[in-house]
Image 1 (cartoon, rainbow, N blue to C red):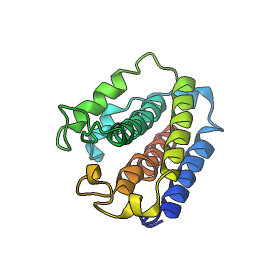
Image 2 (image 1 turned 180 degrees about the vertical axis):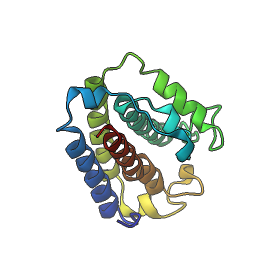
Image 3 (image 1 turned 90 degrees about the vertical axis):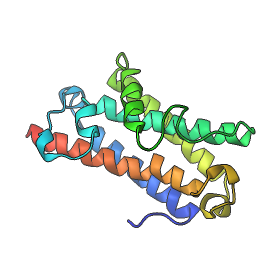
Length: 177
């Protein structure tokens, strides 16, 4: 699917990606759900291949990026203007933040991570519904969104991230067979 350019496409892409993730996760055995990743890191590009240890780590990553989006939008709507990434992080060093987000959930179980992800997806979708197409996809419609559109942040935190998660989990499952 092409990158969404309208509110309707954004909602559909996010919900479709969510549904695909649920369909992939639902039939898994407890052993598959809790198994450790063992990717050949010499063949993979991107720090995430070594960062995430299991499906739970992927789910809490998605959840935490939902929270980043939800908090960023809420704060900016309340006049507490700040960038999408927390203080101390930028697009060059956000990998360090991702490790901290993962480590924050060391004691989170798979089932807890799944529930956190499901609930945060619902909140993100409700928030997306609250904006007009113009607010989501017209650059400059919301000054605090910076040089990008608000829709881009939603896409990055939902459908694009869901595609990444699907690819990673499928690769893990393929390696188990």
